[in-house]
Length: 81
Image (cartoon, rainbow, N blue to C red):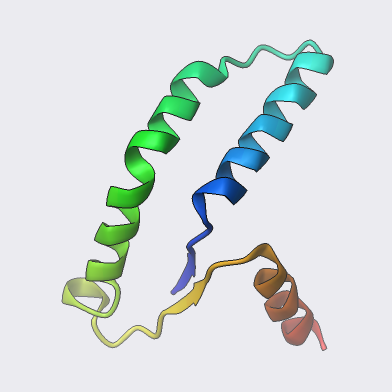
């Protein structure tokens, strides 16, 4: 199982960047609810994922927890070589 456990600042930065891009491209997108949801759910979701990883129906499934986008890049690079 691959767990993308990015820090809140990474998620918010990507959300802001995507929102600006949509705004400049005149694409319909309302970030208000999304930002509130991220701020409200980030910590509880992280805690829930940590508890569920390796237990219950996920028991026996190896968990790879990646916390930085650079680690994803390294993992993908290693898989393609």
